[in-house]
Length: 192
View 1: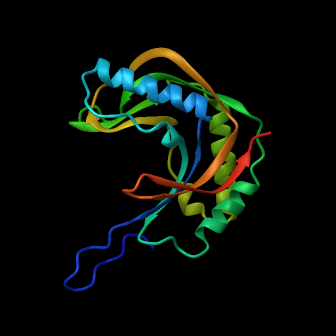
View 2: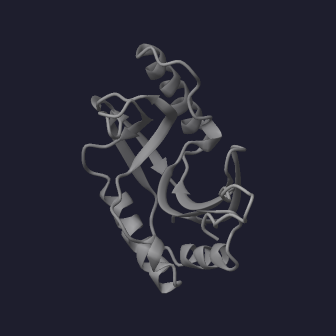
View 3: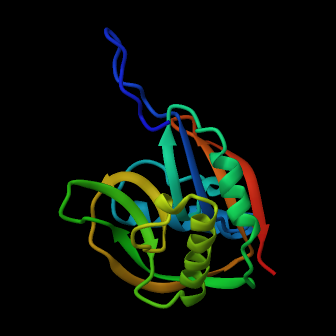
């Protein structure tokens, strides 16, 4: 259920469960991205660590934050994912910076200035399958492919970088335990 109201005398309910569909780099690329992120954070004088390699991903659809997962939501999302038909493809990012650079803090991300047609096509097809699985409310809005390298850093404008290219081989349905940096893999679909 979405962040529910509170009972008298108790604070508001805090979401502890997140469900999302994403593309994860394989472990070798993920380790390279973590090192890449640490280097770029240090070069900008930003303290702290980057997102751990095992958690780096490109979110395709955020399916909500909940105090507990609604019955059937994960099953319907897994069903939608099972219908995906797509060949492996590459993802290309050529920018690094923050969304909303006029704010004091932001997430430090990799993004692309264009391209990624195969990723956009996969996103569009998955949206169709989510709508067919009665999850159309989660298939709305725009899609800006990006990978978050670090959270809550001083916001910086995007800069062009030498393109970073990596292969996408599967889409994964993840149940994230908020605040615990734990990701449970609920379903996946290989791209072939």
